[in-house]
Image (cartoon, rainbow, N blue to C red; front, side, top):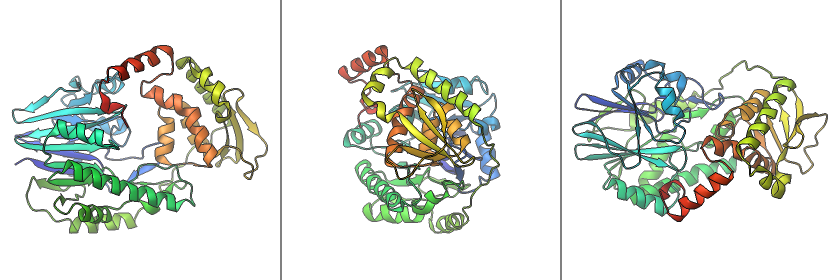
Length: 434
């Protein structure tokens, strides 16, 4: 029978007939602008097994799945697998490590060995899921794919057929919640389990392995976000009650399991309980950035946004009030105002009681927001900020172009026409239908 090894977070290794496939190896270090840390240290034996894996697949390029600093463990003999994308930036990076990089198109079934094949299903704009078939077994790794409707479930079920093993995320991976908004986070956690339970019921696998949530918000300015996360024992207890005929398994980093052999969750729960209790803030001596540097970053951001999206002025004309915000910079005790008209400017005073859009963060976080292609995603996922309701709205408007451009979506004439044809011919519906 095939063998399963849990490495950490969303990283697993499937092995069969002397062929091993590793997935999403985040094994150490902070991610999302130093916002998240692994809940548990990755065992050295699992790192060694990653190194020896013949194939390595990445679901998408978020750093808790595709982590460039962690890829130094691989060599020119490693075979990398990734979905076919428009820009090919992940593939270009991987080719610096190994010439053996395979881009797998939608619908392509790629053989790792005689009885071991995989199929990548791109999902929306960056994510993807993986169907692995070993002999007569079907393993579906949903990873971060946020399944929201019956259409998507029907598409998946048609692709997979009966599912033996399903791997799913079980807690929230978002941080746009202020310190006092604990009820909001409790609702996130509960809603995730309710939706996940319904999806599991529809897909009806024999075994479910919850994973991809074994991390925590690890900095002084986002640590409070851990107060409502779904812990593995509570998550499985909830899901088991709703899906009593399905078996749920929880694995700890370094655990190995031969498919369908006996396995108990009790020891796993005990180990993780200690890890949850031992979560602590990771202190980093971050550089405090001056206004000149932040101004340069913001000016370049404005230039790129306008150059890449020639419909920008149209959006700005209709929604100009949403394209301005006050930044309260916590590490240097400064207040900046930003709009596409003024750029970034320093102001002497800001009254929290007035009804203006505001957001608080460190100078380094603000710089990352302007400079990184996925700066907005890193901010929202990592949660190293607080904002009022208008501030959240303004952040979304201001950085929408940056985030979409990173996904190869541009607000210009050619892209609009292409998108219209896409919808007319209803191609690859699962990417877009929500």
